[in-house]
Image (tube, rainbow, N blue to C red):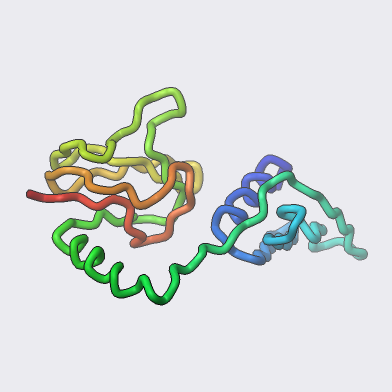
Length: 167
């Protein structure tokens, strides 16, 4: 595993919100912890077959992961009607785990924007999984009401990505 792959793994773990990840492969064992004031730290990297462990601490300049702030309890009743308003919309969900991209490349325009009408089969976004870029196509026609994920963010299987008004 080269340095570039390790750096990409650190960035992915930092964005995912996980506090600790352990990865053990044939020749390398890596433990990544996040959430410290300094950013993300590789705690240990050592060859698995080595007689004595070689510890290589390494700092990477990434912002600390922040926990989402929960709304106050008194606002819960007012947010319930808003959730029922969303029930008339169709939710487009992620079919795979990966990194969500709203554009085909950094210098290209967005696939879709809020308020834009879409047809069945239109490309809504790309999800990168294991260095493969998968185009996510719409299964419905309608209008984009809301984009639920930030660009370049990790997404999970079945995570809501878009709200579409089918009318």
